[in-house]
Length: 98
Image (tube, rainbow, N blue to C red; front, side):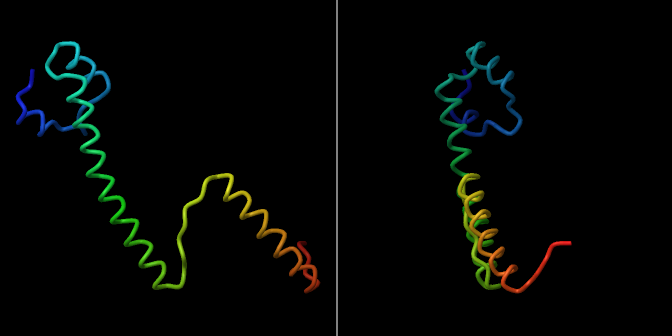
């Protein structure tokens, strides 16, 4: 079994599914310890991702754009509403798609 100090420094970027399975089967690491380290790393990266997203939102707002996230269904509904809205404007202006 890996000592706790080695376990904390386990490079999960280099750990593949197969090597993780082998390590658990050979009792070099417990599945619980592997999962704990994996989720700890994901949590750290999640914080970094949120920081980048917040920076992107701030920059977009400074340029007059608002960022938002949507599900594919929500985005499809948004596009359909925009199409209906701008279709009326185009017809009123006598515009045609040639």
